[in-house]
Length: 539
Image 1: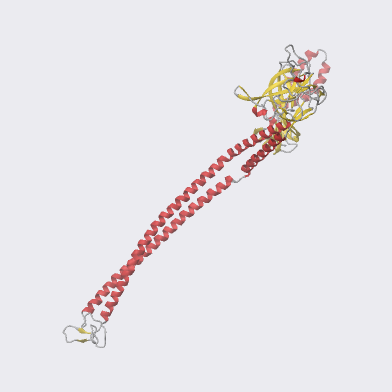
Image 2: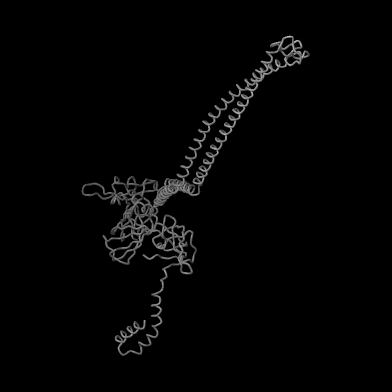
C-alpha cells in the first residue's frame, strides 16, 4: 500500500510540477478514500438489488416495418354493416382520435357476449381441474379397491377353512360311526350266536327256559335258562343289535352323502371365491391405473385447459375489437375530403353507398342527373373518393406497415398507442396510433403474420419515407401494483422465483405469483411485500 501511494505521489509531482503543497493537502484528503477503495476491493461484493414497490406494468409487442409518407388517408370500417351515424361533414377539419361514423353494433356485441361466456366456461373448467379432487378421489378408489381385494381374499380363506372344518367333522363322525358299527355288529353277532344256541332257538319266547338258567335241561350239555324268564335275553339283545346296526348304517350313509355335499360345496365356494378375488384384483389394478393416470395427466390437463382459456381470451379480444371497430376513428388530423355513405345504407367493399355533398347530409346528384363534368369520352367522372367510405385530405404524416406474428397480433386493436423508434434517427421516439389490422394472415418464412398499419400523430423533419422503424404497441397495462424488474424474476408460466436479499446479507429464494408481465417490470400478485429487496442476477 505504501509503495503504491509513493508511486502515485511521484506521478502526481511530475504532472503538477512545483504545486507540491497542493498535492500533499490533496493526498491527505484522498488517502482515506483510497484506503476504503482498496479495502472494499478485498471484501465480498454485495449483489445488486432493487426495492419492491408500487408501480406500473405495460405490456408491449414490437415488430419492425417501413416508414411511408402519407398525404391522403382512405378510411373504412373493418367489416361491413348498416351505417347508423355519420358524425362529420365533407370539408370539416377533424382531429386525431375523433369519431367519424358508426355502424350497427348489435351482431358484434352479441358475438362479444358469446366469446365472454365461452371464456367464463373455459376458466371455470380450468378452476375445476385446479381445485378438483380427482387425483385424491382416484387414489382413494385405489386404496378402497385394495381393501376390497384383501377382504375378498380373507373371506375366501375363511369360507374354505369353514368348509374344511365341516368336512373334517363329518369324516370324524363317520369314522366314529363306523367304529361303533363294527362294535355293534360284533356284539350283535355274539348275541345272535347265543340266541341260536338257546333251547327256543331263535324264538322270542322260551317256556321258562334259557341259556342263563342255573338248572340243566333234560338234554345233556345244555344249560337251561331261568324257567321264570319268558324271553331269551340274548335273542332280545340280538334283535336290538340288528336295529342298532340298521340305524348306524343309515347314519353312515347319510354321513357319506353329507361328506360328498360338503366336498362339492367346498369346491364350488373355492371356484366362486376365486372369481370374486380375480374380479377384485382386476378392479384394484384398474383403480391403480386410474390413480396413476390422474396424477400424471393432471398437469397436462391443466396445460390443455389453460390453452383453451388463452384461446377463449383471444376470441374475447377479437370480439371487443369488432365492437370497437363499429366506430370509425380518425387516425390523424385532416380535412374530410369525401364521404360515401348515408345512415341506413350498408357500407362495406365500397359498394351501394351514397356520396354526400360538402358541408351537410345532402346526397350528391347521381351520375345520370346531368350534374357534373364529362370527360373527353362523354362519360361522367367517378364520385369523390371512389370506393372509400371516407377520405381525409391535407394529411401531413407518416404511417408504418408492420407484420406482427399471430400471437402478438391477437392483442392488437385499432386506436392503441404505439411508440415508434427509427434506426436512422437514434433517440427519437414518435407516438403513433393503430389504424387497422389485416383480417387475414400472410405467411412470412413459414410463420403466419398479420399486417398492422400505424399512423404517426407527430411530425418530425428528420423522418423520410423508406426508413426502418420499430413499432412497439402498448396492448395492456396496470397501475399502482407491486412490481419488480423483469430481470429479477425466473419465470415459469404465471409463477416465478426471485432472490430476496435478507438483512444479514444472505439471499433467500422465494416463489411468487405473477400478474401482468411487461418488457421492463413484472406485476407481483403474491409472495412479496412492499419494501423488500430483490436481487438482480448478473448477466
